[in-house]
Length: 122
Image (cartoon, rainbow, N blue to C red; front, side, top):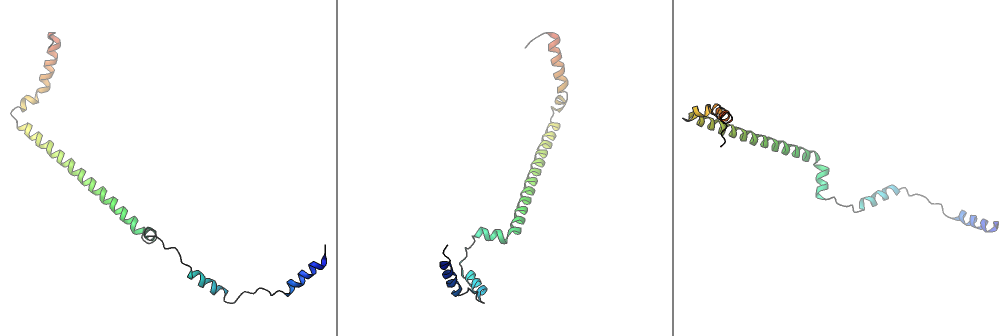
C-alpha cells in the first residue's frame, strides 16, 4: 500500500472545517414542520375524533326507542286481539244457539259412536 496517498488524504481531511450545529437548529426545524401543509381530515374523521361518545349515546338511545315502540305496538296488538276474542265470546254466549253449541261435543261423540255401532257408512 502506498502510504503517501493516505497521508495526503489525512492531511486534506485535517484541513476540512468541522461540522457544527447552529444554536437555532431546533427552532428552524420546528418552523419548517409548522410550515408543512398537513392533510386535512374529512368530515367523518372529524366526527369520529370529536363526537364518539355522542354518537354512541345517540345510537343507544335510538335502539332503546325502537325497542320501546316495537314492544308497545306488539302489546297493543295483543290487547286488540284479546278484545276481539272477548267480543266474539260475548256474541256467542248471547246467541240463542249457545245451548246447542255447549253440548256439541256430546252430540258429536254420540254420532261417531252410532256410526260404528250401526255399521252404516255415509
